[in-house]
Amino acid sequence: MCCNVDDHILEEDVRFQRKVDSKNFCDIASGLASQHYERLNKHVLEAMKNNFAQVTSLKWQYFGSEEGVLSLYPSHREEKCNKLYDPRFRYTVSITFLHLKL
Image (cartoon, rainbow, N blue to C red; front, side):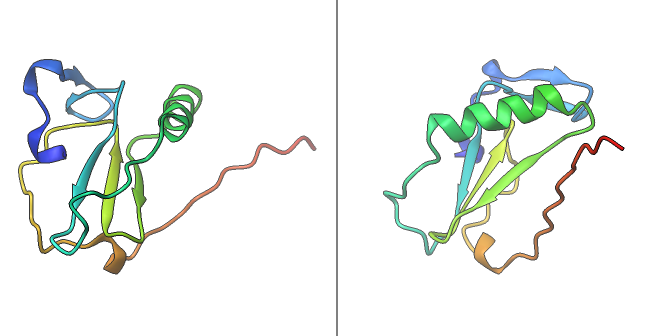
């Protein structure tokens, strides 16, 4: 949970202007989500790490599940943990970049 991230594992990162853990992601679960929700697997984490390494302008990566869980990469300590928040009712934007050879 992003609300319980241990400050000792976080490192200051100028890209985010805050302390983060680039080795992990964290979750924020809606109060309506099951307490035993399925976390994203290690393959998703590796894809997020690769995206971060390959695209220098990339910052936060989010995934909102149909279970009502928001997963954030990189992991960081979230100060405002609100069980009323539900990512299923949040407007999101997806942007894809393509590299074309002309």
